[in-house]
Length: 254
Length: 332
Figure (cartoon, each protein chain N blue to C red):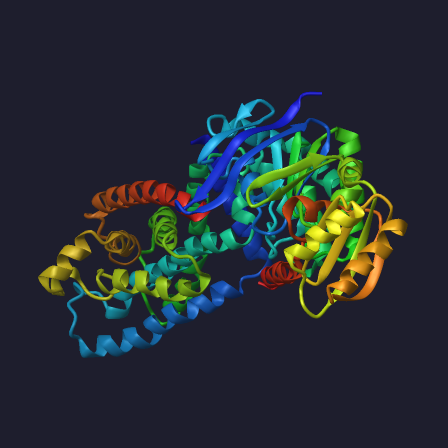
C-alpha cells in the first residue's frame, strides 16, 4: 500500500512535469465539451423539453460534459499504459521494487491529475456564457477531489478492456465504445427519471451517474443530499476496478 | 565470487503452444559480463523476462543471487536493474526528469537523489543535454539514458536486452565504453542479450549460444572459436545447392572436421586449408558444382554459431524493424 501511494505520487509528478512541457492535448480535448456547453446547451435549453429542476439547461449539463471529458481522458490514459507495453516503459516499471498492483493503481490514479486540469479548462468558458456556479471554494475543491478519485477507476476500466486487445490500432474505437454508453446512459445530459426503465437500471450501476450527481450538487445546485451515496459508490467502483485491472494486468504483461 | 544467475531445466510455454524455452540450464558467475547470443525467437528475451521476474516459468527453477524468481521476486527487484529492448523512457520530459521519476520509484533518499542522478548522467556523457526533452535525443543518446537509468541504484546485476540494437558503430562503442567503466567501478554483473557476434566477442567474459529455446554451447569467445580449431574454407556457390551426398564426400576425402551449408555458402572446417583446398575443389568440379569466390579464414563466432545452431545469424530485417519501432516511439 505504501508503495502504491508512493508510486501514485511519483506518477502524478510525472504527469505534472509532462503538462508543464506540453499542454496541447488538454486544449484539444477541451474543444468537444466546450461545444456541448456553448452550442448544444443553449440550443436545447430554448426547447425547454428537459426538466432540470429549475436550473438553466446549460448549467445542468456543465458538470455532465465536464465529467464526460475527464472520463474520456482517463479511458485513454489507461489505454496508454497498454501502449507502453509496446514500448519498454511498462516492462521497466514492472522490474522496480514496487509490486505490480502498486504500479497499476499508482498509474491509474495519476490520470486524476490530468482530469482535474481538463475540468478546470472548462470552467472559465462556462462562466463566460453565464453558467452560475455555487460560490463556495470548499464545494469547488471537493468537486475536484471527487473528479480525481473517480478518474482512477475509469483508467482501470480501460486497462481491463485493453488486456483483451493485442493491437494499438483498435484503441481509438474501443475508447469510444466504452465512453459513449457510459455518457448517454447517465444523468449527464438529462435526469435519470426521463429514461426508459432498462436504461434507469443501467444508470443505477453506471459510475458516471454518481460522479455527475456529486459534481453537479457541489458545483451547480448546492444540493448535497445524494453526496454520501455518490462518494460511497465511487469508492466501491474504484476498489472493484483496481482489483479487476490488477488481475487482468497479467495478460497485458505476457 | 558467488553465482549471480542459476537456472535449471527452465521451460516457458506461451498460450499452451509456443515453446519459447525448452529446458535451459545456465550458471553465470558474479562479476562477469555474460552474453546470451542467439537469433531472434531463440528465447533470449523470454529468459531475461523470467530472470527479471516479469514472467513465471512454466517449469524449472531460476535463481538470481540465490533468490527464487517466482517466490522472492520483490527481493530480486531490489538488486537488479533492467533495460528492455524497446524504448523505455518518456520522451515528453527531459532526461533528468526521467531519472528523477525512477530515482523516486526506487526510493533513493531525497538527499542523495540529485547527486546520484548527476553522476549517472555524467557517467553516460549526457550531462549537457540533461534538461533537454528526450524527444530531441539521438538513438544512441536515448540508449545511454536508459543505461544511466539502470545505473541509478548501483545494482548487483544489470540485465540488458539487446543494448545496442539499431545503433551505429560509433554510438555502440560509446555505450560499451561507459558500461565497461561502470562495471569496473562497481563490480556489477552484466547479463546481456545480443545477436551481434562482434558485441559478444568484444565485450563479454563468457558467451552462451541459445537456439530454439536451448543453450547449445557455452564458454569464452576464445574457447568457443578454439573448439572449432583449424581454418574455415568458405565457398560461395553458384547455381544449384549441394546435396547430402556431396557433403559426405567432402567430409570423407579431406578429413574435414565439419561441413556446413547455409544459404549459398559452403563452409568446410579443416586443420590446414592449404592441403585440403585442392581436394575439395576437385570434388566440387567432379560433381558439377560451380563455385564463385573462395576464402580462408580463422573460425569466427558466426562459424561457432553455424556449427551448434545449424544456421547463420541472419537478422538484418529484424534490426531495421526494431529501429523503426524505436524511432516511431521517439517521435510519438
